[in-house]
Structures are given as C-alpha cells and as structure tokens.
Image 1 (spheres, rainbow, N blue to C red):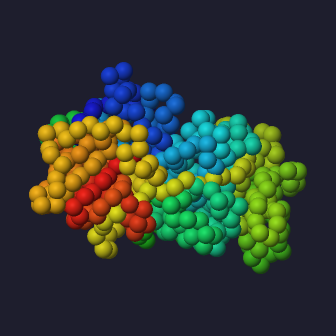
Image 2 (tube, rainbow, N blue to C red; image 1 turned 180 degrees about the horizontal axis):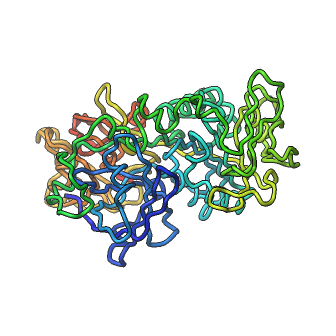
Image 3 (cartoon, rainbow, N blue to C red; image 1 turned 90 degrees about the vertical axis):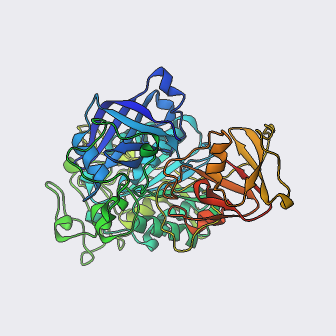
Length: 529
C-alpha cells in the first residue's frame, strides 16, 4: 500500500481568477519521501476521492512543494480546492510520481503548454534554466491575457535569461485556436530538439502533429495527460478521516468520476474542456479588453496589430494576423524596437528569425527590447519578453495495452538505460528464478539501482507480485488510470488488462503499467526509471 503523508498548507496563491497554487511546507522528516523530479505530480485526497496535480515548483527551490490547480466547470476536485483550501489545512498526499521529465537538462528544450498545462512545464523550464545549460523555448497558449498563469514569473525569467529563454504567447481571444499549420511554423526552428507537450487534448494533438510533420522522432515528443482517478488509493490505506481535505456536504463515493472530472486540469478532448481552457473565440472574446487596441483583421492592410501597453500582462504585445508581413508586429506605442525577439532559425531555405515567424502567425513574444519602460503586469511588475532557442527531450515508451484506451493521467517521458546497467544483483528475495517448465516467468526487475530476480506466476499482476516480495514499487490507483506505477519493458512481452493512460506511442516506446501487466513470455525484464 502506498504510504500516505499528511502535509500542511503553508500558502495559497491566487494565480488568475480561476487558478490557485497550493504551497505545502515539508518537515525535515518528510523531505526525503518528497524528493521529486521536474514534471512529476502529487496525488491528493480530495473529499472521498483522489486527484493528481502536477508540481509547478522545482526541486532546487527548497522544501516547499507547490501544485497549481485550475477550476474546471463541474470539476469535483479543482473547484473544491480553489474555493476551500486555506493556509494551515492538512491534506493527505502520496509521494511524487510520473516520468514526464527530461533526462538531460543541458539539452535544448521546446515546450508547448496550453492553459493549466503550464504547471509541469513550469517546473521543467525553471530547472533547465537554473541548473542546465541548454536553451528553452516555450509556446504558451491561453484563452486571454487574464488566463495566463505565471505571467509575471515567466517575464522575470525572460529578463534574467535573455540568451537562453524565449516565451511565445498565443492568445485565443486575439488569434483564435492555434492549428497544426501555425504550430508547425512555430516549431520549425526547433525540429532537432526535445519536445514536451502539456495541455488540453486538442492542443496537444495539434502540437504533436505539427512536430510529426516536421520529422521529429516519436521518442523526442513527450506528452502529459491527466484525468480523474476512478480508484482511491487513500481508501485502501485507511478511511478518509473527517476534516482532512474533505468536501462539506458531498455524497460522492470514493473515486467516483463524472465526465467533468475526467476533464479536470488537463486532458480529455471535449467541447466543455475546449470552452474552459482553449475555447473558440466568441464575439465577447474578440472584443477588445479595456484599454486594448483592436487586432488588425484580415480585411485591413497587412500592418502591425497592437495591444495597449497599459493592459498587457506579458511583455511585447507583438500581436499580428497570419497575413501580416514579417517584422510588422509592434507595441501600441507605435515603434518597433531594434532586435526584437531576434533568434536565428536554421532551416533548409535559409535563416529567418523567431520574431519574424511569431509575427507572421500573430504570436505575442517576450523580448526585453520590445517593452517600453513603465509597462506593468496586472501584478504591477515591469514585463519584458525574451526569445531563445529550444531543444526537445524524449518521451516515454509503453508496451502492452488495450485497444481503444483513452489517454489520461500523467503521460510518461524519458528513456531508460539498458537493463541492469551498473545495477548490482540483489538476489532472489526468497523466490527462485523460474524456468519455462515451472509454469512461471523469469522476471528481472531493476528498481532503485538494484536488480531483483523472481519466478513470476503467469496470472499475477506485476505490481501485486512485486509488493508481495516486499519491494517498494511505486503506485497510486492500481486500476490502470494513472501512470504512477509505470515502468519500462526491456525484454519479453506482457499484456495490460486495462489501460486508460498510455497512448499508442507510449506503448510502442515500451512503457507498461505494472498494476495491469501479466506475463506472456517465459522471460521478462523491466526497469523503473
């Protein structure tokens, strides 16, 4: 059974009108259990259910953990957390899990985030900038300026790392929903890099297709998906104690999930979710915000579209329709500053700049040179945008799976080292290695740097068997609805009895859910990353 930890809420940060960051303070005793990698998530007890939320903090930032939650219409967990969690509250939490994380932070990274999909991406980019040497480009799509989570923090990072970090903002209220062609143009300068995608399913599908069209190998495209868990790991451990992250007046049974919950935070491609996170621009969306100049329409001459500087939340205000000429975007002040967001882009046809590509597509880019002194964010911070290249990282692999499964919870990332590389053999822990005649599978497991070998009964699920052997294998839902138990199949073949998390690319890359895997071959080797 997973160990349940009770964490104290130290702070609740209002990020946007419909998003909150919950900050947990760790005691010295809890610090070891909550060591995590950028891009991982926490599983929280919310009332009588469990919900997974990505960490937006970064490991180097200290002993405080931060998860960021955006309200979803009808969402059980997100609405309750945003409305009720206060400093001092005690929340039951499982240890960090997930493999949506780069293996090498010295790589150049190309990050796509839509709406609250910025949460794990924020953890990744902060780590890359602070502890790595590579360049980072973020394509960040939101409904409107008021929906941009971490706007001020992103602008500050852009100012601090002018040669390494670029943010390209896409506002649906101004530019409409980004399509494959537009995202392909933005990604073209970075087709050799490691890509990480997180956001609503339609956004990720478009970004993934754009990268695929550019010839980016599947193993360098990593996706993160979330849905509500149907199972409740906390119910297995113990009954939900009264008063601990419990929703007043709820009659929901543990783990119950509605369609709205399945859309919670990131993921399912439904009309409701599209409306919530990256919805189609309505008449109201297209009307200018107070103080904002209207965007040039297709019936106007190709000239720079502008947004009034006084209302900008993030920097350069370089907004333009796809019909505009390169370099046309400028701030409402009217003059384009020299060197705006200029980052060389290597293509077969020659050299252009990211700024030019962004301006052609109507992207709002961040660059120090394009912000007039005195312009502020909603929080009163001076903003500037910067532009930098990015590189991709690989994405997780998954093996056996059920046809027609729906991707959910944290999608996986990263590539495992060869089985047993540098890992000492731990022995059999009481189980003899099997031969085919035993009716069992010879199992080799690399976990926490130690190799274990067992005789694995053919009808026994991998996770259940490993727990029976006393191994501390990670898990959360045990129902194939999250990726907390994910491991990589190095040799042999298994069958997953249920899979609601991994997509076909994950499976092709060798990732399996231990909680649902049974052996099909006489020998199987897996590794936990």
